[in-house]
Length: 143
Image (cartoon, rainbow, N blue to C red; front, side):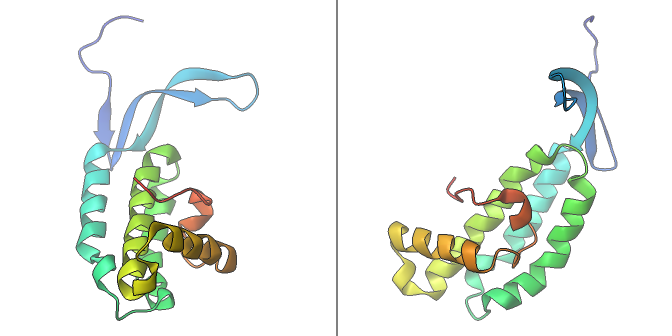
C-alpha cells in the first residue's frame, strides 16, 4: 500500500474508509468499508439532545418509547446496516437520557445504587420496550 492524499470519502451519510473487518471464519483483514459518517452522527446526536428526554417527566416509559422508537428504528435500519459499532455511543447516550429521565421523575432513584437496580429490573421486565435495547444488550449507560 502506498501513501495517498485521500483515503476516505462520504456519501449518503456513510464514510467509506479503510477499516478492520472480520470475515467470520479465518480472522480479520483491512477493507474499504462504510460506517456512519461523523457529520451524520453529530446531526443525530443533536436531534437526540433536542428531544430533551430527561425533562419530559410528565410522560411514562410507554409514551417515551412510542415517541422515539420509530425514529431510532429508522436510524438503526439505515445507519446500522454497516459499521454498527460506530452507533454505540449514540445508543449509550439515549440510555443516559432515559436514566436522567428516571432520576428526575422518581426522586427516590437519585442515588446511583438505586437507579442501577431500577435499570437492571427494567431491562429484565421490559426487554423490548425501546428498539435500540436489542442492539445494546445490558451494557451500563454510564459515560
